[in-house]
Image (tube, rainbow, N blue to C red; front, side, top):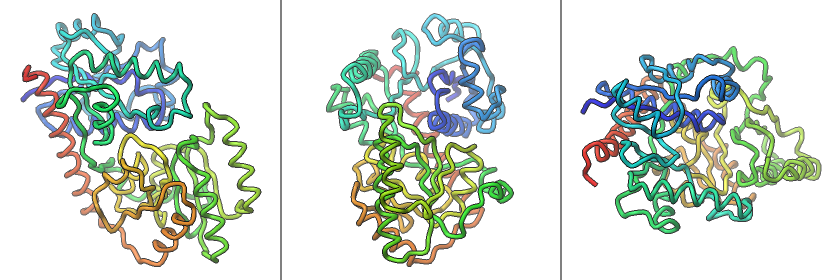
Length: 382
């Protein structure tokens, strides 16, 4: 089925993780040769600084064109009137993924990442929770189909918001990565002066990421005599709880692990991937995610790198694999045990051909699911 798809990029230009997610969606849609992709972005005078930040300083959207070289760029407002004009003037058939409620006559598929406030209400004030609740309810009340990143979110939409039994669809866990990332670019590592043996924690320092669990586990590893370091990438800030970063710094001093860790901060995606390739494994200690494993584990699995992940429900949606090790969330002893186990097991990265084939298979799966949900909307089969 031929589809002209308007990609609603407006709300994904705000942070690195959201941009990575949208790029994966675009790459999957471009996998189907019947799809024509239009990237819809805010008018330049509204959000250019955010856009430059999202694309590593490049305002030409080359970040997205890597995923779909033939996409067409359209600057427009995010509202029903503008989208009707695009349907009329540019022949766009459907809009995706929309985190905003549009008029029901507009063909669109909605998207929502997670229901974190329902599980961790202590991290959100009443106003923030009410705003999110209102946005989700408005999306569901359009009676449009919704795509989410996990079965856990599907279950939450039904339990907390009374979503229809067939209204919300989960994307499969399908790790894929830019083909260029599979080629070695070791020159990008020189400036970081990385240790020879290291685990990678590639995460923002938000409170629900539970970085303190890793710090405590590092102290245990040090006491057990493990000769290994720990490299952290990601923005070191927590806007909701600024004092959390101070507590983490105090924990480093208290546990005397400063010599075991290297904090690099937020890095260009290409550098982060190259650092990941050299890691013994990726550690993901999170207490909550909307997608299995989050972005770092997704990338690790695409590259064939091992991952040590917390045993929260959404992470259990990661398919069983010899490359995935689960530890008890918030339990530093359990994490240290898994670190020791991973160190004791030899591991060989898959070949380029295997990585490429795995990524292509994932793209096909994602493309099929997203396309099927779009066709439900376009076919009026609700």
